Amino acid sequence: MKTWFITGASRGFGRIWAAAALERGDRVAATARDINTLRELSDKYGDQFLPISLDVTDRAGVFAAVNRAAREFDSLDVVVNNAGYGLFGMIEETTEEQARAQIDTNLLGPLWVTQAALPVMRAQGSGHLLQVSSIGGIAAFPTLGLYNASKWGLEAMSEALSQEVGPLGIKVTLVEPGPYGTDWAGDSAVHTAPIAAYEPVREARRAGAGARAPRDPSVTAPVILTLVDLPEPPLRLFLGSFPYPIAEKAYRERLATWQQWRALAEQA
Image (cartoon, rainbow, N blue to C red; front, side):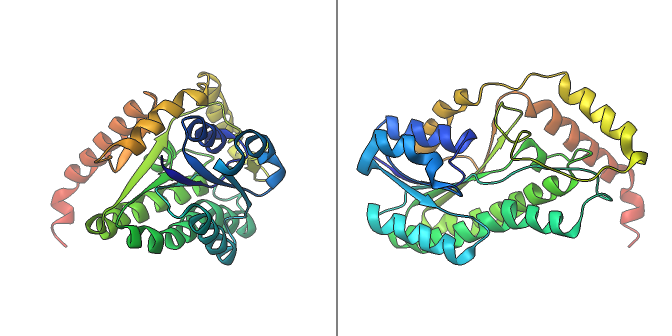
């Protein structure tokens, strides 16, 4: 039996993975900004489930929530940084408030949760941090610049973290999903005020997104359960086959560009 702490569990991946862990007999502390969205799980699983109201941008609140979960369940085996949302819009269109809110939630939120969980995991000498990134943490796309920035930041932070905490017995995995039918592009999304000059770019992006059907997110649950049971989990794990050609193309192009301009670079 494992003990989980999952942020953003009101819907989407967080809700699906919480339910899957509970169904197999694990204990789960799950957070949501509106705790009423967790009532169904509370009613079904009783003391096996601990719902906590939390906004991950509140650092003090994060520490209180993580400490409460560790105190009530006596351990933290798996911590899932899932809370986040998509900010859709061009770089020029993005307001300061929108940019700060995106980074606060998608990057600093996981930082606060990680910092709160590490003392517990260090004392145990074990633990597994799952940082929910995205294919947008590997490659950047027009209309998602600030979202990409938040996930690229999460990728870099988590890669460094894995080297810091690995010797302490703590594992880190960046989970990088492709497109699934969650609410990421739905009600939870934020959109900038459009500038007309960018409409051709926006229209091309819409056309590309409309050509693929998002997969059912429930298919990810068995993969996540397998992942957290691995004795040596990977640092990075894609979800689905969609991300592979995108990542492969992005890295081929980067390597080709670096090599093309190597002679100039080495003059420095």
